[in-house]
Image 1 (tube, rainbow, N blue to C red):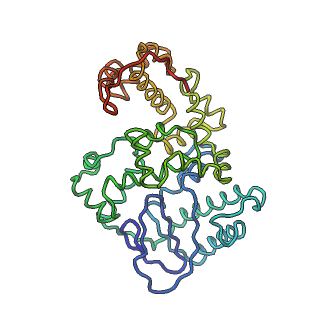
Image 2: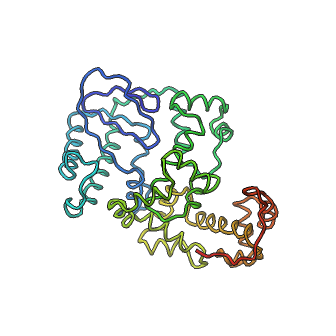
Image 3: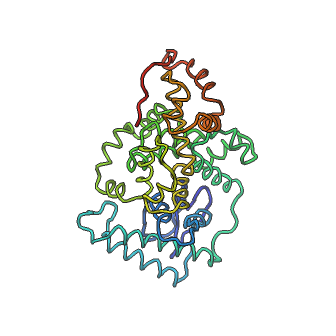
Length: 381
């Protein structure tokens, strides 16, 4: 079996962990083998780990070692430990559990299943450290491809280009493009869009964020760019996808229970208020500031303060272009008490002052027409 271009031999009592960005291919089959497959939501488990009891406020990431050691060769005792959990999962969810009937599941089944998934990941981590049979040598070119994929997955909001990757990894743009094409079968732009669209599914289903906000979180130019790319890939618009799947009982249950999506929706509805703060949001949802920032960094690649500033500056940018409100009024409208604070934060994010932004962008053409300020009152979410 090949994972990100690295070959592994799969024998009895082998566990294989595939991350969301991994490319896996079964290259050759010599003998028949019976296997059990457990598919879980990577984002959900990471979010769960950030909200469980953690008195020392340590950063828990059970996937970190697994990313670098995806194949575990178990001894008899280790294999038996995993078999027990796999059997329990099967008994809880049924033989074919891809689409279980949630109305017939036992009480607190979600919590029970989640605890078993975490237990499996904990054991995987422990056994990786003890195992001496894991593959040690990795071809440098294939390892580089994996590093590039991880970098793209965790830096979607930044303007990722071949030129930037070239500077980060100290190799030429043509070499990076060649690595991606040869090892995963996609061009750089195709791979970037694949990763962005994959991350958009959860934001569409489990949050009420606008398409414009989701587009910015994922690094698209604007909502139109996101909609066009999503529709081409999925065969439905983001709104159609959201409408068709958000009514699913499992989706509604997760949306109702998972803290990170409650937090995102709350921030989206209140970021314009000058009363909102990380401390009040953390208290409201029963998490520490460290946990709140961990969740947000994982989901939107920003801490609480940075995310709120980013949302406010995005709203202010719209107001600067579409209204003739004074900059002082816009600063107050988006939640800042002083123009000085607003100007400093705006300049830090947009790399120009609000006045320079208005002058530069308002003259650009949109849909063949010059954008002109209006005297409309701004719309507050």
